[in-house]
Length: 303
Ligand code: C5P
Image 1 (cartoon, rainbow, N blue to C red):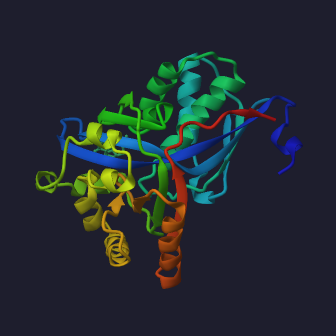
Image 2 (image 1 turned 90 degrees about the vertical axis):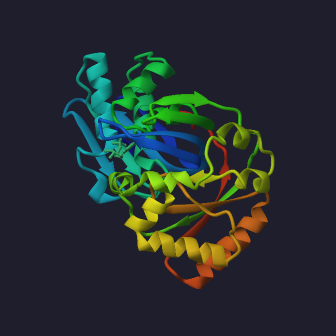
């Protein structure tokens, strides 16, 4: 894409990466009257990112082009975030946004929410609106439950329906093996499939201890995801991938959030890459990636 194509009005263009997340712990407490579920989760950013370019145009509202054509409509959280930003500032926005997807859709890695948070940061920058992080996070909460957390990474504990966020200092850093199933899982379907009994037998309340763990083994012993049985009920493909990883020796593999991505933590990159190679060799259609964690927020670059 040429710069003039992105720059029709000769205005500024800015780019940002939108990192993804995994949930190290995810305790679910119950369904609320508004249909959402109260939860508590320790979340970290991981180095798998979508990329956004945003240009101010002369008119035409907010236009989104996306590397995955099916995601380019007005329901995309990027468009909804830009609209929410415009409403907050009481002004009409004329923007062209290009979104290159890398984060799996429906993968429980917060891709859409991270894209929305990056959009709010880009709007704030390009329009020199001067909104602080907490205001951007509050605008984000109206776009989706997971959007605020992307203003508080590399590590944070989220609570409520996800809108209450506290940054935390995570002692561990290392490598995450991601096993990405091709099947997208709907967050709403997973929450609907959750049963209180799913949470009863699981570890809970370990987010503070998990944040203090220093090795992958120590941290992995505290991982839990109360939505995991519900994800398996919704998707046999994810359950199959989970069993495949267990057979390959990933004894503490976990599902991330309400999605179809599985992960295992490693201190050494080589060890993670060895398992990734084995997964790829099996040819089961599961995509394996090794990424660094935790990561925070990418800088905005003006071009
Ligand atoms: O807030 P968001 O639109 O991302 O949530 C998608 C869906 O996930 C909600 O409509 C709801 O069904 C479910 N959800 C939930 N409890 C949460 C977060 C999401 O039940 N804490």
